[in-house]
Amino acid sequence: EGVTEMTLKVNGTARALRAEPRVTLLDALRENLDLTGTKKGCDHGQCGACTVLVDGRRVNSCLTLAVMNQGKEITTIEGLAKGEELHPMQAAFVKHDGFQCGYCTPGQIMSGVACVREGHATTDDQTREWMSGNLCRCGAYPNIVAAVREVAG
Ligand code: FES
Image (cartoon, rainbow, N blue to C red; front, side, top):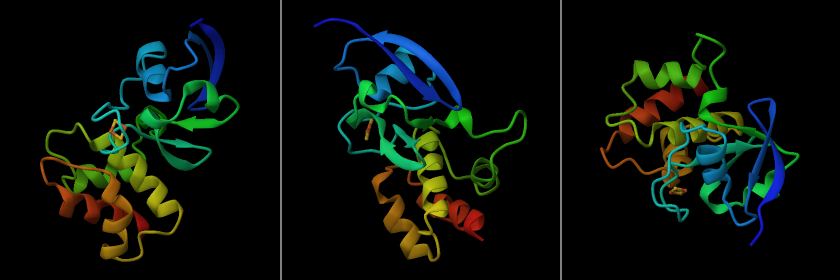
C-alpha cells in the first residue's frame, strides 16, 4: 500500500504529511504531526482518550482515517489554550481536580467542550450521559462532571 500526501488543518494551521491511506487520524496526529496530547487508550472506539473536535463535533480519532479529514477543522487539546491562558474547560479541570493520572484528561476536556457547546450540560445527569463515552480508570467522574457543569454555567 502506497504512501499518500495529505493536508490536515489542525488547530488553525494547515499541516502536510505523508502517510498510508489506512492511517487513523489519531496516529497521524501523534506520529506524523507530533501532537501527542491526544491519547491512545483502546484504539477501538471504547475509551474516548483520543477525542478531538472535527468541525466542532467530537470525534474518536482512532475510528476515522486521517485522509478522510482533509478540508475539515480539527481541534486537539493543544489548540485550546490561548498562549499562556488556559481554555475555561482546562481551568475548570484544574480547579475541580478533574483528573488523577491524567491519561484520559485531554479526551475528557475535548468532550467537555463539545458537551457545553452543544447544550448537553444543563444537569449533572445529562452531563454524565454525554460524557459516558470517556472512561476514567481512576474514577474522577464526580470532579469531571463538576468541571463541565461549572463551564456550562
Ligand atoms: Fe479511541 Fe479509545 S483510543 S476510543
